[in-house]
Amino acid sequence: MPRDAGPGPVGRVRDWLDERGKAAWIVAMILGFIAFWPIGLAILAYMIWSKRMFGCSKRSHHHHRRYHSTPTGNTAFDTYREETLKRLEDEHSEFMDFLQKLREAKDKAEFDQFMEQRDTKSEQ
Image (cartoon, rainbow, N blue to C red; front, side):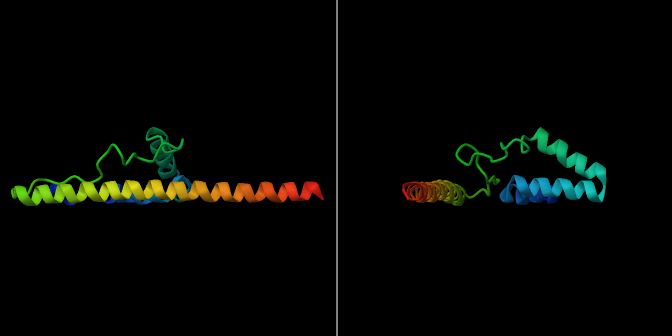
């Protein structure tokens, strides 16, 4: 198998679960216990060891590059590829920050609406 083939099946499952959050890891652990208890125990141990159990599973996209590639020998293409991947990673990071700000704004709007309703009820 070539070195640049990407993560194996275990890595793909890990990435898939990471994309879905801590709840997916917990469901996988419970299903592992139901299917065969050592599997559930192994998933629990991995969750604790990798700090996924305590909410630290999100890898920082600002400091770690997601994509690694081996040089092709064509320096112009390699430079173009690296610049394109860097731009995409930056755009992804900006988009994730934008989504976070949207969530925070929505939460604030819902909270403000709740407070207004509460104030209206207390005045009556």
